[in-house]
Length: 444
Ligand SMILES: [Fe+2]
Image (cartoon, rainbow, N blue to C red; front, side, top):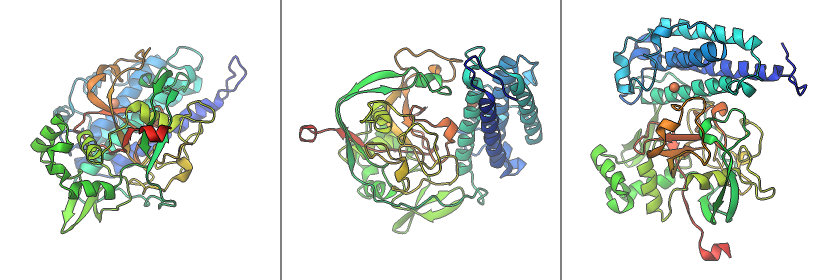
């Protein structure tokens, strides 16, 4: 079915894209929840994660609230469960004790909601309220489901027992990438006012002036991080901030999460399989405090959020900011390691087609990258469509992560996309790269 907008552009393709994005997200949710038995679905694998069955029904509940009730104006499907799946009413540690829908009931519920959404998608007009303009609410819900899918993937990484997920290995490195890139001083546009599915915290686009700085051409690798571990980095308070050292000490941290010493070598467990450390893969499962300590040990620092985004989006030829490091077009498998096609970050040098104009590699995909910036609204920020998406998290408790991981779907990943978490968190697919101020002789 094809509508015609006032500007005579058909909107059939938008409807098709929405249907495809919703279906792709649901296929992934199904894969992640059918990989384990019912007992596993209702169990809590870590106190900082929800049972998988909570994520599943929560995804359906958000879809019901925004699309069935708000956009569609239809009768509620299950108003009685709204409270159970309100993430703000029940912290993750309490969720297993709630009278949650069981696996079969949760599956029926999300399918019923989805049927209603496809029914209303057939007739919805995209030129009404701001909520539906350009299909925003549908895009928001597809992104929300994919974000929970990434969270469910992190839960899979925390569960014990035999492996249940598999995927081909990521592509090999095809070109050596090392060293640093100088980003010249000047102004660039940070954030966006035009990307139709960008979320409120990415808006509005605004000019930011930065002095010259230097940023690593690639994320910090396992091999590089191992040198920090081997140098006694976890035992030396000189490299750690005061809260970082306090956390390192109380939590007894000695290496990234999931690393294990195997005689004189190191390895890690990934989705139930043990393997020796691959030296040229980006390090993953480090917290902000560990990333910061490594950077200090290396004589550098973490990039600010603005430095990360300028390195990723600024095109020195045109002076404009791109949607992605490689340009404005959506990611393909040649650009970046996204979408759970692989269950690990790819080695440095695996995605030359995804590099930025300045030659910064693997900014998108592989690992989320910690920045030094707290989570704040941009100048002119306005919460939309609800304060709980991001505004209630603003402040210095959280640090920004950028770029997405191998577990992030392309629909929820852009050069402007902002993720945030507590500095101690490392169950997420988090790594980092370093930056530093440019030296006077480098700018001359
Ligand atoms: Fe959610």
